[in-house]
Image 1 (cartoon, rainbow, N blue to C red):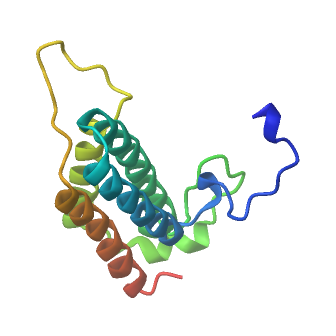
Image 2 (cartoon, rainbow, N blue to C red):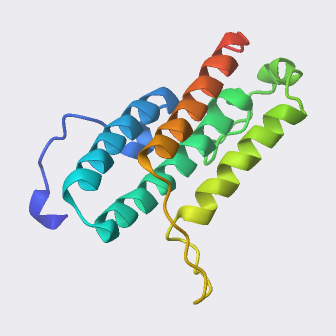
Image 3 (cartoon, rainbow, N blue to C red):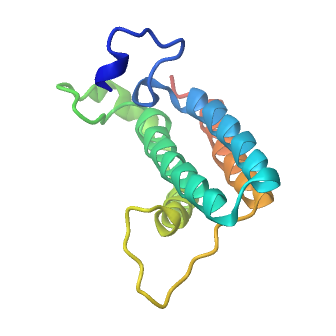
Length: 149
């Protein structure tokens, strides 16, 4: 904001974070959700959870760019490093299904979509939220294990 001009942050902004750093940040948001569940209202929890799922969706997008597509295609990049294409031969249907399922779930829970008046979507509980963090964390480790760099 205009009132915080010149203030140096101790951490880089979300958009500058790698997938692994985003996962760490998502864990801190989970801890905030836990506090809200203990001391806050359902409305506060739902609002924070919707923001969480927006961030999780963005983390999945970064994972696709950074790891699944091996930085071959990156948003707003002027280059397409075609020499990295040879490492993309291991993308299979289970990869596509996993990303699609995660993105579909996140999209259903974020505030960016207008729901029909008669539809109410309960936000996942803390255990489900942590399972979603573990899912992206495990998939990230799996992709890193494919030795794509």
